[in-house]
Length: 307
Image: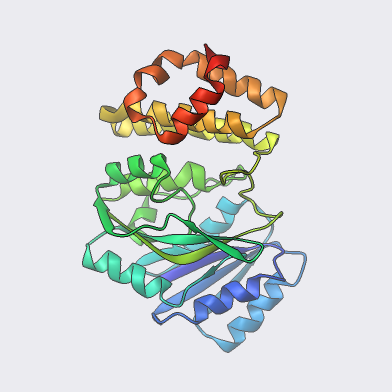
């Protein structure tokens, strides 16, 4: 059985679509835990109305907290062998659960990942869509995730063995729960299988919590500090767990910092990012073998500022 967890907060215009996309699944053996995170609109009431019609739905109302605390509430209730997440402003294809479950079972994987669409103003764009299926160890999956080419650190698009959460919970402080937790999920996995088949749609709008994380979007100034602290924590944690790739973990921190430098115009934020890149400029240069095309383009554009 699969436990699907959805946190909702003031999404009365969108939450119904998300719920209906789950109820339309071809895979039927799941429980649907909806955590109303202190909504002040009808989001919680809408969820209750669906729960009256389908016994697989359980609605939990809680005082407003951060996203991580809300996800933990869902995890504390979940009974499934696998855990899946969906955001209340997104939707999934009817075969979302069936495909991921089959992928995990066939490849004996702790985590299965699918591709997705990014919808902007009703237009769908591919997001991590590709041909083929790839298998990784947990360490390899973390490294692949940080390349940002086949999948990302968002909680959706992933089916996760519940055993991963026996020793792991989301942080109950901060706004961005995924960047501090998802890489740990992969690191704790023995095996991961990844497909580019697009079965999840991320809907972009002005109220997205993840504004600034997509190419072409400006990063809000207030987001920079939390991201940098999380990336420093990530480098230290991964270097301790997988010391053989310590140079790569540091490189990814600097690569992300370079991307953020390019996507913010806030003076204080740019200065903090610049100081980090200057502090580790020798390490960044030494990591040239890891450079992506994006790194090369951004260094060509901004490299002179760190000389």
